[in-house]
Image 1 (cartoon, rainbow, N blue to C red):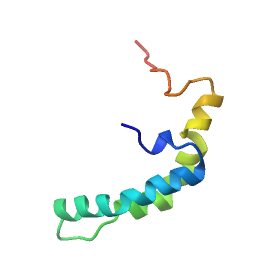
Image 2 (cartoon, helix red, strand yellow):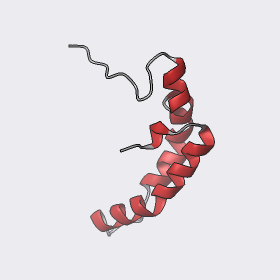
Image 3 (cartoon, rainbow, N blue to C red):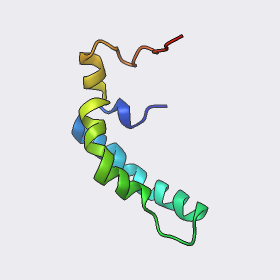
Image 4 (cartoon, helix red, strand yellow):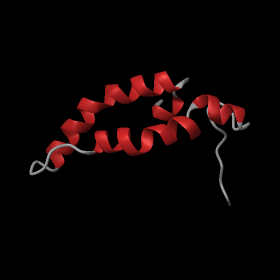
Length: 75
């Protein structure tokens, strides 16, 4: 299943991320009904730019890791 890091561009990443907001909010509220959803906003604020700059498809392709990325292991 393709995810956020399979985005073809920063705009594609943003679109994929926005489609996850309601699902993540619902899951978070069902798991922790005593507090409101925070995960989506936290990722949007703290991690999205880093992920777009270092993890999406054009980045791992230009690094020679392929598409999908070649499995890496230290074993």
